[in-house]
Image (cartoon, rainbow, N blue to C red; front, side):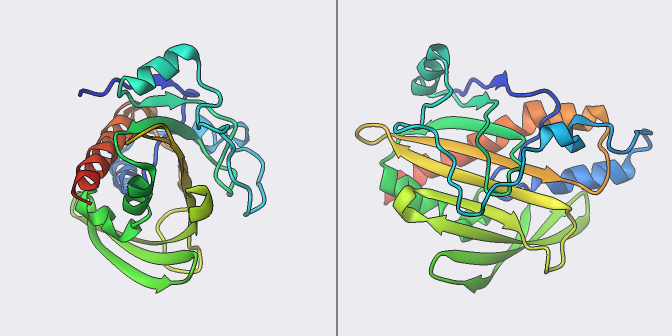
Amino acid sequence: MSLKFRTEFLPGKIDHVLLCPIVILVIFLLRLSSTPVTPLALDILSEESLLAKQPKDTVPDFGPDGLKGLTEEQKKELFAGNVILVSSPETSPGGQTLISAVLLFKAPLDRVWAILSATEKQIEYLEEIEKLTLVEKGSDFNRMKFVVKVIGKRVVYTVIHHFMPEKYYFWWELDKKARHDLKELSGFWRLYPAGENRTVARYGSCFVPDFPAPEFIRDWLSRKSVGSSLEKVKRYVEEMARNL
C-alpha cells in the first residue's frame, strides 16, 4: 500500500529516523552552500522549538492505545496504512523532539519490538550507513559507533540506546564523550498493541547542528526525508516480521 504523509507538524521542524543518517547529508550540503544565513535565526535552533529538559526516566505518554492527540481523521488514515506526521508535546528524555510521527505496523507487538530494538541491524535498511560497530552492551543499553559516508565524505558519531522492554519503549542520545560531528541527536520509539498482528508506533526525534541551515535544506528535510525514512522502516519491519 502506498503511504500518504500528513504534514501537520510545526513549521521549520526536521526529521531524524532512528539514528538520523540524513543529518550527515545536511552537514555537507551546508558546507557546500554559500547561502548566507543569520545564526540562531532559524526555527530549528530557536528556544521555542526545544522543550524543557525532562528527567531521563520520563516516558512519553500517548494514552493506553498510543492514539493520544490524534484527530478522528488522523486515526482513520493511520489504520488505512498511512504514516501520520504530527506535532506533539511528548518528547524524548532529552526534551528536544522537533518532529513526531505515528504509524501502524502490520505485525505483532513483540516482533516489531524485536526488530526495531535490534539497533545493530540499521545498516541493513539505511543505506547511508557505511559501518556500524557495537562498542558496548549492557543489560538495558548499548553504545554504537556510526560511520556514514555522504557525498564522498565520512562522518563519525556514537549513539547510546536505552531500552525499557516492559514498556515497549527505547530512546537514544548522542554520546558526547566520543568523537562526534553533531551537536545534538536524540529520539525514541514507543509501541502499543493494536489488535491481532498490528502495532501502533509513536516516534520522535531531533538533531541540533552547530550551524544554521538554509531554508531549502529545512524544507527538503521536513517534507521529503521524513516520509522516505519512515517508509523504509515500515517496509523493513513488516518484511522481517513475516520471516520471524
